[in-house]
Image (cartoon, rainbow, N blue to C red; front, side, top):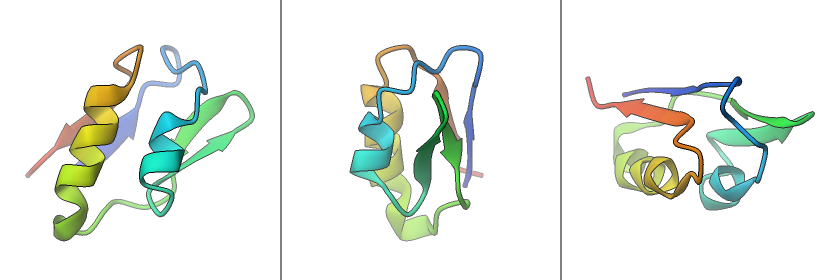
Length: 62
């Protein structure tokens, strides 16, 4: 799985970091991917991506 955050769209609300803190952290004003998630985290990361109010998170299951 590959997860990215579009730093141009991200508003730093922190929802993703609260949902999956081992993957996301808000640094400054934007969320950052700390590490690519393990396969068993896919659905939590997908929930974070779907819950992003500005659709800044992309999760690719490859």
